[in-house]
Length: 334
Image 1 (tube, helix red, strand yellow):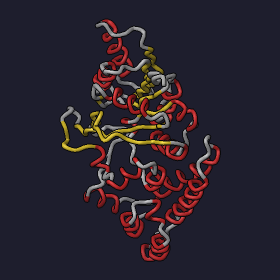
Image 2 (cartoon, rainbow, N blue to C red; image 1 turned 180 degrees about the horizontal axis):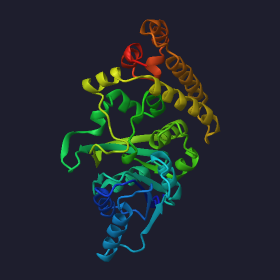
Image 3 (cartoon, rainbow, N blue to C red; image 1 turned 90 degrees about the vertical axis):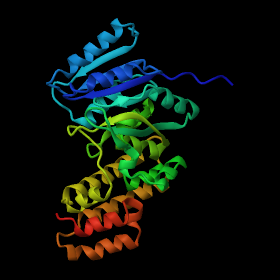
Image 4 (tube, rainbow, N blue to C red; image 1 turned 180 degrees about the vertical axis):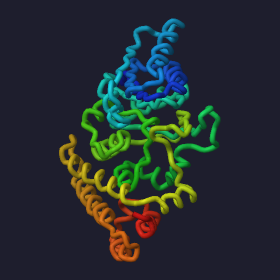
């Protein structure tokens, strides 16, 4: 049996006013033990010199003996597209077999690509792989916790993903962070165009789970920087985080969840390969559940009957966070 060919790796690095940190991130990418063959930087109309820093770091790397054959390209958006559309553009411009998503303000461990490429080589059926991350502050100092811990990912959720039931896990809630993810290029082709209701990483994960296999590594392979200016950061599911959710208005969130479910229902039958019939039925049931939640009345007393009905029929267990979402729907203000 012939050994599998080493896949080519592209990095999709999206930037927006990231001058403070992007140089350190790009240097960590260029220092990988398994180096990418292509880096596509998609800048979303930055006004702070981000592009100049990116170009200077790359030029200095080449002058210091870096491989001039590495395909390094910068796309400059005259008008900002927004995070998800900018990532769709960057990923679509990549030509590698594997595409690594990169935020502008993190730092990759030197062996990040080596570890993830090795997993793709070992598992040809794998469409998306993500990992844990070490949370750090703006100065790079550890915050003493990891991404998976902060997101409250349970042992049951981890087991479900490892055993091939990621679709069921993702119907309840997203557990993937794009900054830690590597995907096959054909997954991006299958997932395009990205629906407006979805964030790019959540949509890629859902399509991967619905049409193939996704998984994760427990290793913290990046420093995920939290500095107060993140375009998409991480929120905690600890007691304080749950309390803040109960006090937050519910209307926009429920409308967003419904829009996402409806977009998935519309797109899923046209995906190739087509998801199993059981998945399509679950998506339709998810839409029905989110329609009930979105239509809950303003009066908390009048919410009790429809919420308890969804609880008894298992909607909150299959499509949400169970008792936490029951309580949220009962008490949150409009």
